[in-house]
Length: 118
Length: 112
Image (cartoon, rainbow over all chains, first blue to last red; front, side, top):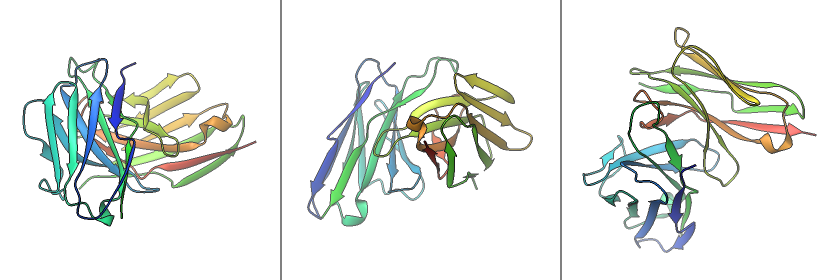
């Protein structure tokens, strides 16, 4: 099956710094990538949809200036948490997929990045 | 608005059968997906129902009734490794590539 990687797998940073998380589709070209956030023992919450070469579409309540998303190529999307604060500490998960007829479409999840802001 | 409701916890013993229900309320419903997530891991796709009825994949089956806005995941011959969180989710388009909105998850604990 298709593989999606994330880097780093975990990161600890000081409050006020920015953190960049990479999401890569390793063996396929992803026309669409999604970013989710998950707090402990809670559900995955969709943050934004990222299409290659265009601006990301953010879900209601997600600050686009705080969570910068770039999808510069068909295999890479990045999420930058700017001026991170302790409340941004969470598990960030990306997923990726390729459109190609509804019977073939699916999205594959990355292993997640655990962010701890001190 | 949009919402998915599922039980927070379910426990069962090895070899048993367990059913995890999911009711949803949303506009623009296309289909219901189920995902498994072990602690600290990524969600793993289990099944997708676009049409009413039962989909069977090995020990796991999923059912959908669009008229009742209801679905369930059925796990048979439970094994210890099935202990995980299970999420129902719906997509905003007629495939599993759309934006996914997840339920709160059901923590399944399988006892020996």
